[in-house]
View (cartoon, rainbow, N blue to C red):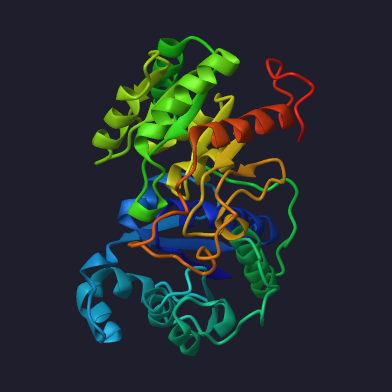
Length: 356
């Protein structure tokens, strides 16, 4: 059997799909699997054992309402190669018009995708031949992907533990080791960055949080710096008055390797948070316009420190907001969540009397 996985999107979207792809691979070890992904997010996938070939495309050039015609023009060459593969089935984990069109243009006679109730762009449904039906409400995206793969290919919908097959090279480990050597102690990993402005907790508060973590636990904090996020990191570092914060800019897989060694991670709904989840790091999320139950950690021990005393978060997803209060959270509140999360992880420095 020859299967096409369509999952475009950002790094977090890719990470959320890895357990379903791993379950599919375990169920059909002899199948030939091709994954089509965005070039800007493909680095986290390279070398993964869940597929036989990775096809990288750039859909950002595809604009306008005539999506089928525009795809044919902008992605003519890679999609021609995909069509020549003669797939038996395609599975679209993205649920957008552009991803559904790619599944259709692959020529696969069987095309699986979510039902209309589970799609952000409802029109994508017309390009699928099969769906798993309506899924339970408030289903985490990782579970949602697992249920789709299980319906399509009979894979395990409830693997335990979840697998995140991310291939790390010696060069990635060496890059992470340089940061670990420079810190030379247990540390918290703090990420002030993110693609949506409304998802960002104030960078200055990350600096204050680093000082609070240092005072409470004697831990320094690594402030991660992604591409284009230098100013956010600088603001965070300037607000750590005790020199408790250490900057680090790493490649994506070196970041994954570094996260494995962190005592705790703090960040918003962004790629590095989902990588920390994949790495098994104890996580404290700060979620605002998006839902923790959908995008956050599937681990019951991980914590969302976001506000629950407001009613405008429901189905928000705004990238701009004139009433931006969902991320107005004090560092002391986040510190309390960090303390609870470290206690749940049985961190030796945290007192046994912390209320979980």
